[in-house]
Length: 374
Image: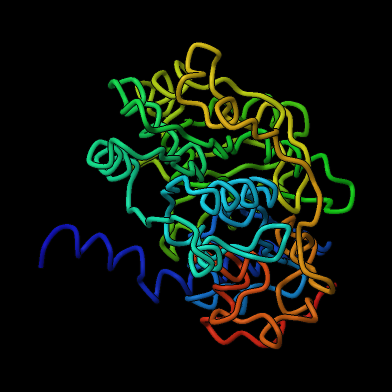
C-alpha cells in the first residue's frame, strides 16, 4: 500500500471518526447552548454532506455553509455584461460552471450561445491565452471568476506579455474580508468559523488576524477529509467550552501563517483590493481584485465601459438564493429547491456550481433537514 493511500485511509478512518464524534458530543453537553459553526468553502460542504457529518452532530451544534462558492457570488451584473459582449460579436472565454449561471436578465452564457453569442469554454486561463494567440484577428475577453486560489494564475499570465487582442473581466474575490463580514452579521450570530483550506493555502492565516482580533471567535483552518472536519469542529467546541478564542491551523500539511508568498506577491502586483459586491451577500470592503491602472490595457471594464457590479435583478422570483449563499438558511428551506430549481434546470447560482450548497445537497438527495434546531 502506498504512503499516500495509507494517509488517506487514516483521514477516513471510521473508528477515529467515531471517537471524535463521541468527544464532540461530550463537549456539546458541557456547552449546552446552541452553537453555530460556519464554513466558507464548497469542498468543506461537499465533505460534510457526502460523509453525513451533520447527522453525527449533537442537537445543539449546527454546521452551516456560507459564501464559499465563487460561481454563486459572481455578480449578476457581470454575467449580464459578459453575455452582452458575446452577443455583440466579441469572443468570450469562460469556465464551464460559470457558463450555466444566469444573470439578472434570466439568461446564462449557455443560453446566449444558443442565441448566437460567441462563447468558448476553457479549462484554465492558460488555455484562454493560447486560444487568443491563435485567434489574433478577433477581440477576446476572458471572464475571470474565482477566489484568491485562481486569481494568481491570471496575474502571472498577464505579466507574461498577453495577446493584444485579449482583455480580462475580473470578478475575482478575496476571501478573508468576507469572513470578517460574516462575523459582523447580526442575523447570523456565528460562534466559530472553519476557514477555507484551498484559499488559506494561498493567502495564509495572517490576513485573518485582524478579523479574529476584532471579534474573538474561534477560527480553525481545516483540511477537506472527514477527519479534518471533525477535528476542526472539536477544536472549535473545545475553545467555546474553555471560554477561549484562538486561530488554530488544523491543515498544517498545506496552510502556513504567510501562505504562498510568491503567488500573493504576483497577484497584488497586477490587482489592487477594492470594495466589492458579492452576489447574495452584499458589499465587502477590500474584497474585489480590480486591475491597477498600469494594466488598463487588459482591463475589460476600461475597454468596454463595464461598470463595477451592483445589486440588481440577482435572483428569480420566489428563490431564497441570497439566504442560502449568506448561510442564513439551508437549501431545503428554499421553496424552489428540487421543484422548479434542479441541477438539470438551475434557477439560482447555488444549484449550478459543483461547489454550490444547493447543488451538493441535490446530488446527495438531501430532501430534509437532518437534525432539529434549537
